[in-house]
Image 1: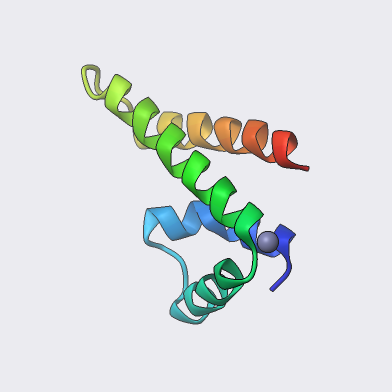
Image 2: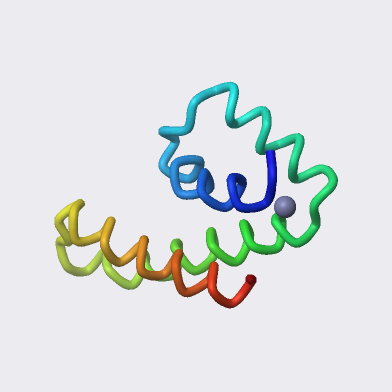
Amino acid sequence: MVCKECIDTLGDYLDGSLREDLKLELDEHFKDCPPCVAFFNTYKKTTRLCKDALTEVSVPEEVWAGIRSHLFEKIRLQIS
Ligand SMILES: [Zn+2]
């Protein structure tokens, strides 16, 4: 797995919707790629902060998905 594929699968990984075999590949990739681990941690933290801030209001899943992909794009641009 290359970094781009790794980053593309992170959203599904956090959703719990990632296929088992890809999850294993991702874990393997993390072993030799510290930048992707850093990216994953930042992404996870930002997503969690954002979700916490939004628990007061009820956000439909599609709105939440939009926010998340927006965030994801932003972080991805910072890394590449
Ligand atoms: Zn990588």
